[in-house]
Length: 224
Image (cartoon, rainbow, N blue to C red; front, side, top):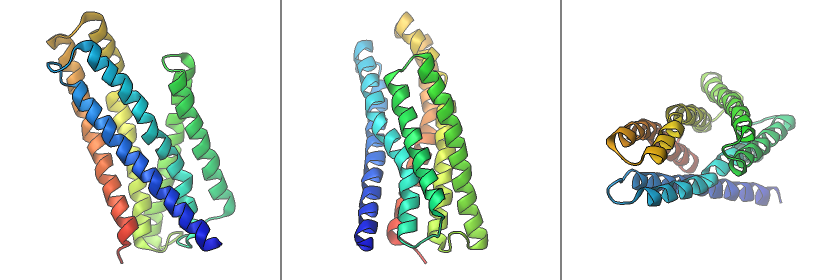
């Protein structure tokens, strides 16, 4: 029974990875098409942007749930010994984060959504610090994670949080720039600043993809 529970957790972990990476690829492709100002009208590009935001909810949801699920998989598999209260706290944090993500999405462009995103940012800061500490401490001391490949996974997962936080920072000017594009129409004056912001953001997006690929390889191959 315990073996079946562990395998079920691994299966759910895999599904979240597929939802995260697959959805992110969809977001990336839609973003690339939004940039093609000569191929689509402004109205069509704005429709693509709305679709991008909707598709992005898949990866955002998977990311929030990946936090408690990853700790549950590692604990159930005997790879790490974590107290029950810590795993439970991870589920509380993950579900609270998921609720913030969806509440902000459903009340977008309101003070409520702005409040949700401020709280979400602090949640991500805290979880990033936890995974960076967990991975680095385990690599240096062999505890609480004894196996190096899993310690590396924890450290790289923390780096994903850092890259994602930098995505949010780089993407921040998009709101005013997009508003100007809608108000004034498409021109070099409105398009080029937006394009530069999206280009900067794309660097950190590609870093997230690279980290996900490495984390997946570590989880499957389990080197050493």
